[in-house]
Image (cartoon, rainbow, N blue to C red):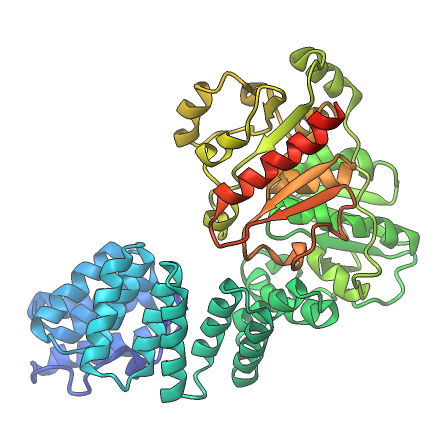
Length: 514
């Protein structure tokens, strides 16, 4: 994270580099307006503060503080291009203002213009080398740019200057995690949490790192740091309701709230049967695209009611976030519930049997990209062109994608050996039927891996070097999905080497046995 104010939250004005005297002595009314704007800005009332900063600029177009802090608001409201423009105007008034370079660097980084971000942080460090914030901020850009060793050196310097700098400890954990130094990453995250126990993002990072390393008890507990954001934005209708902590559920109704991605919901729906076994009535809230897919397995229990996110909630006695159930059930590596038994619809299987025809060769379903909006999509997805060296004429390849990204459409059209049926897929029930008609699924870390694993379909999951927590470390199997085989990058971003290994493995398994 970048040092300074978090977006849309109240800020400490002094941390943003207000200059105390607020520029040359202005007229009394302008001074009062600027002071009022700063007070509103501190309180998080960004719209009102922005209007007052703009009023100051009408009277004094070169007022440094109004330009700078209006730029900060633009950054906080994610209008980063305008933030750059405003802060650039401010720096023409005062070319030696360190916080302004830090903030313009943060805006450039948000725009993914990393070289320009680095130039701003370099300038801030040159002007004030004893300021730990600039070292921390430059480290974040270097991390995003893949300059891991340089990022770690910057964070070490930030911590030499400010040993109790929680944000730098947190970011140092991020870098160490990317380097594969997981024990050190956990220690750095723990230090951040010790320094700022109320920082939910730091606690969540510690939880994910512990889970990745197989420390489930500690991991589940700290991963609860993800929840305050959900309670504040998505779950206002249950914020005053009792949360289930493991007490007797016989004859009571529990609401399970889905969160995060489709794959997460498929993975953690496995906890519904144990709840039913306790005598509970279960209301399972899921993302709308999963309704038809999960209706089948859930119909096995009359005590289960399936609803879509956004739908009016029925009466319930208590609730639990779906991904908090492992914490309550004390799930560890030796006690992972079986996946939810998802079955493909017979009519859909018949439809896809007609579309795919009879198999004359081994048939492999492939998925090379996940949801573009996912925070880790740049890590977990590959380009179609990266996958092509794996393809061979001895295997029938079926794209399991419903939707393609524009950059993949033209290239896929040039691959006669890959069959694509995106237009024929209506929902996940079609995907489930397709999975029943392939010998193997080869996929990056997407919901398709969870669906295949839940159905017991053989699935090879291609993982980034620093893969998601649920796939643990170094293992080639998964306690969550017995039918899964995990194949991992040996270096960050190195899909070509992994694809070469996958191609060899396919030839030695499917073709040798076929």
